[in-house]
Image (cartoon, rainbow, N blue to C red; front, side, top):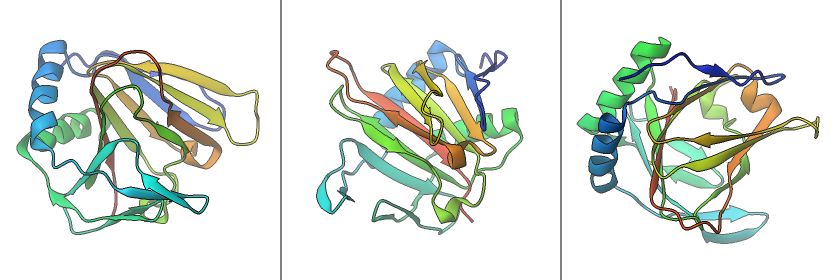
Length: 197
């Protein structure tokens, strides 16, 4: 683990920090190779503005308790953490001094897989949740925009082995997305650790 000092994105009405090399390349390669096959990926149907379609990525939900996770009319039942997911969770918890109960994993298979504008503000996450987002595999751009001040925007390239921490009032005031890209790009795993009681 490299654990370099985080970069403070210094966003108004938010608390977002980025560790470009939370895991070194060897660790990141190891977890990517194993998790892409071990995680029980699924593709759910999602309803947006009255239209239902297949979600443009694969997902899986893991937890240390029995709490379900609901978002966008999807209800996910928790799976038992794998040893590798637990290892990563422990590393993150040790660094940021927070205990997580759950992990929503995302697999972006290529540039056409995406995640539209949203906030992680579901009631089950509580007020001002902390989200720890670890990236493995192909790099993708992560966009942020303020809900009311349209001049406040940010784009950051999420690197292999990097960690992004969003906390405080970030989910109240900001939206984020991983947009589609026409660039030829490989698989990316995103592990988003959360607290769901």
